[in-house]
Length: 290
Image (tube, rainbow, N blue to C red; front, side, top):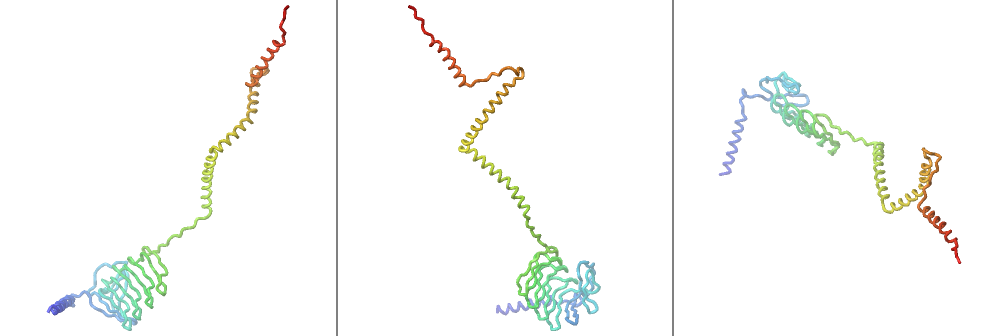
C-alpha cells in the first residue's frame, strides 16, 4: 500500500508540473520557429512582440526577419530571439546549442563536428564571453583551454599538441599577453669594478694584520734593536749639528767656543791634576840638620 501511495504522489506532482508549463498562446512571450539553410537547420524561439529598449552598442543581437536569423552589433530591426537555440547538420547531428535572452547569448554554448564529436565550449554572460573556454580537435583531443572575462582572455591560456600534451602556457590580462622581461646578464666590467672595490677592503684588513704582527713582543724586540742602532748612527751627526750651532755665535763670532767635556773626560782631568800636585811632594827630600 505504501508503494502505491508513493506512485500516486509522483504522478500528481508530474501533472502539476505539466499544468504549470502549459501557457496559453496569447500569453506566450515567444514561440518556436524553424529556419532551413543549405548546410544546417535551426530550431529556436523568438519574441512574439517586438521588444522596445535601447540596444547596447557593445553587444551583438540576434533577430529574426523574412525566414532568416541575422546578427547585428549594437542594434536590431526585427523580432529578437528569446529562448532555446539548436542547430543541426543535414545528417541530424547537433551543430550548435545554447540559449538566447532578448537577442543576446546566455549561459553555456556548445559546438560539434559533423561526426558528433565536441568542438568548442564557451560560456556567456550578458552577451559577452565570460567563464571557461575549451577547444577540441576533430579527433576529440583537447587543443586549448582558457578563461574569458567580458570577451577578453584573462589568466593562463594553455595550448596542447596533437596528443593532448601541454605545449605552451601564456598569461593574459584584459586580453593582452603578459610577457615577462628576461633578466639581462651583468657584464664583466661591473664585476671587475666590484672586485676592485673589494681590494681596498682586503688591503685594509691586511694592513690591520700587519700592524698586529708588528705589535707582537718578538717584533717589538727587533724594532727596539733597530731603533737603538739608528739612534747610535744619528748621535754624531746630532753632536756635530749642536757644536755647529754653538760655534755660530751671532754676538761675537770670533770668540772661542768652549767645548763641553763629557763626564769621563772630566774624571780623567781630575785624576791627572792630583797626580801632578803630589809628584813634587814625593821628589822633595827632607832637610836633615845635624
